[in-house]
Length: 65
Image (tube, rainbow, N blue to C red):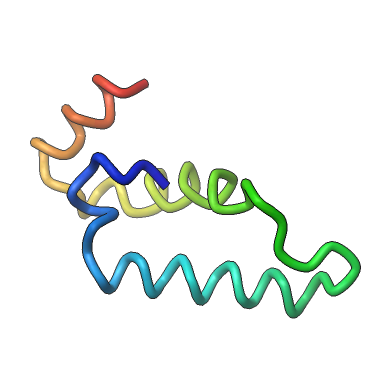
């Protein structure tokens, strides 16, 4: 996650990521949780929720890319 973006500071978003990563670790016991998996989740999160993110946030995302 990119902690500089305000959307990732939201508690509900942090809990969502925690849940996704927990489910990954449970479903893939051989690998469990490894550092960097959250970086794989972030693009999916942004793409699938992009229509719900306001224009200001979209501008910030374009600047970071």
